[in-house]
Image 1: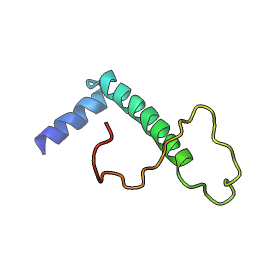
Image 2: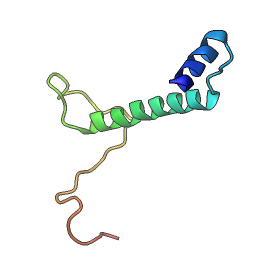
Image 3: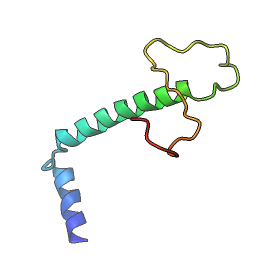
Image 4: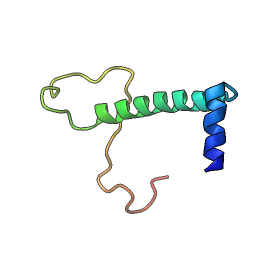
Length: 75
């Protein structure tokens, strides 16, 4: 409990600075999550109303395997 009180006091008096490395990690992580999520969404089955829309040029085409993870390696 004493640690929490010291942390709260440091924040209230301005003696604590949030490290910029943590902020950078959050920003880069958010951008990566949005990018990966967008690629996954564009490569998934189209939602209602989006069936006739074309895939944007910057989104790579990901081919599905019939039996992913099963069988002999291809390389």
